[in-house]
Image (tube, rainbow, N blue to C red; front, side, top):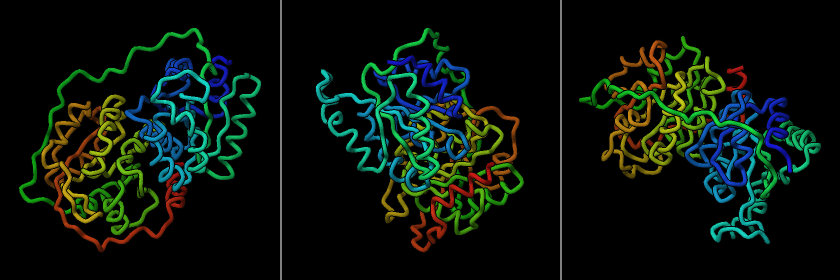
Length: 379
């Protein structure tokens, strides 16, 4: 058994400064030390998949990052592990507990996952080893992970058994508390809905003068952005539906001087609505979140989402976004891209036309090259 500080402090010296996760009782000493440590950033994720996406965003920003989770939540993380970190060659360290280990007296809901956790990691091509329980083994474990990152640029996992880590004498900081104020929602619904093309053209044009990156969600948002112009500061998400906001949050937190423009869709946002709560709670001021809402899953044939029944602007305001606007015209975008005086993340909800356009091209640049050039652009 090691102290949590033994691992975290050694990892910190190896540039592991960013952690995102969902708690597990096996992780308690470890995760509490990370939270209390002034040299590390910890983000409490709404679910394990979001933790992976946040860690991937931090990795893109040049910081070694760790996603922590219970193995029962590994299922929530399969999508971003297979279609984000694997596809875009984004190395993260995964610390996954082994609840339900054969022979361990544990809760019945952990039995099956305890049997298959390591096999599952191998099946999704993530090499793993047991989390170290001897302080002297920690440097070599991190060296093996680093070697894998350099040769493969993909995730590496440590499987933590019960009792691997014990508590340091620490005092947890006060909980996250958002600003206690009512967010005023500006703007109004458009009388005539603009096209997604109109909005994206304006965003790309007006962001040229800003230190900004544009991260586009899965589906036609990314394909439309690519059609307008393929640029070094663009990222086109494929797979990992709903993860663009958590991915952008991870990047925004490790690169506070960089404007992170998120292009989200209604279907994607609904899939991982918990991301809005996390962005609102941590409130990075450099996030500009556009939600282009055409009320359909356009790239899969135009099936309706439930967005016509809800109010995204009200949801964002309730989640803690400090600036929320109903975007009815592209003229509002000057403020969105260039205004730095307002506190907190900005949220722009825009109803757009449902066009069911099947002619949009797919990016010809590979995902790993998209990530590589964006990382170089940021650096």
